[in-house]
Image (spheres, rainbow, N blue to C red):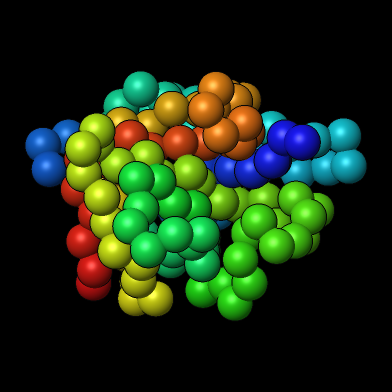
Amino acid sequence: MKKLLVVLLFLLGLSHAQTPIKFTELYSEVTVRGIEFSPILKKQNGQQVKMVGYMAPPLKPKLDFFVLTRTPMATCPFCTTAADWPPDIVLVIMPEGKELDPSTRKLEVTGKLEVGIKEDPQTGFVSLVRIYAKQVKEL
């Protein structure tokens, strides 16, 4: 059975030309028919961005990816259905070979933004918005 992870995004830029993105800037419209990415998000696709949020409860002690949320979440994303997830979440993928410890603190993520539906071939997780992290730091 496929696991489904729906990710919506939001970013901020940092370092050189990293554009800050807020969770409220991810979508221009969310309806029962789906979501529409905001013009801001579309414009930043493929660019370096910065985003601030919280790590959703992870499945393992060392993380090569996690879900960034607007507010702290109490439940494991894989213990509920995708319908329970807020629409404004972002999948954060760590650089190859780098892992992160779980955190309940506010995080600042910088990296390359990718927008659009994508299924991870190894996990089967599906995401809408991703950041390929260059840096993740606790605030």
